[in-house]
Image 1 (cartoon, rainbow, N blue to C red):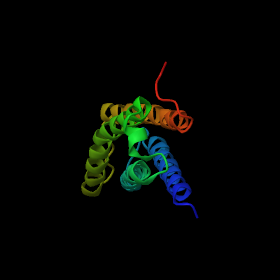
Image 2 (cartoon, rainbow, N blue to C red):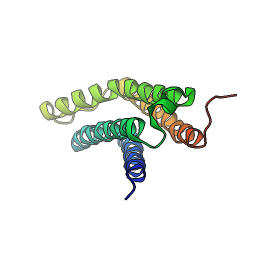
Image 3 (cartoon, helix red, strand yellow):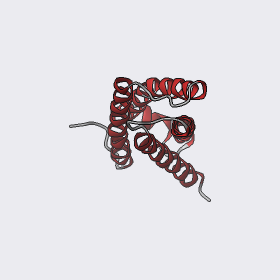
Image 4 (tube, rainbow, N blue to C red):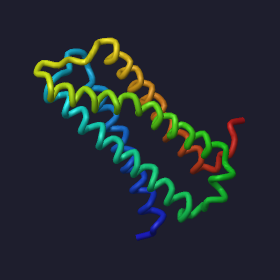
Length: 152
């Protein structure tokens, strides 16, 4: 099999997994969250992080070993926008991850623990923003695949 096709396929799978797990987090993270659901949310978040890392790794592999090569991507403002959005999503995921870990630990120590409503609302907002930003990545990828090098 052509290595470029395999890298593209693995990159798509990683991004689809990332998106699926992020949406799963949003579905799980709801008012009244407690007990096993808090532990499940922490595990889903760990998988989300792993798939995001796989997305970054496979993207890097395509950057350096893909058919277009690094020169094409590194000179392309659309690529920089796509990578910048990916970094923004990663940064926005830090607080939810910290909260999920803390909530899971609190649930182990205290039966019936329920996260603070305001903290839960902030985390849900950050998850929604991540989902929104993530929807732009495939558009930017399609633009790059068709040779778009500017936003004019």
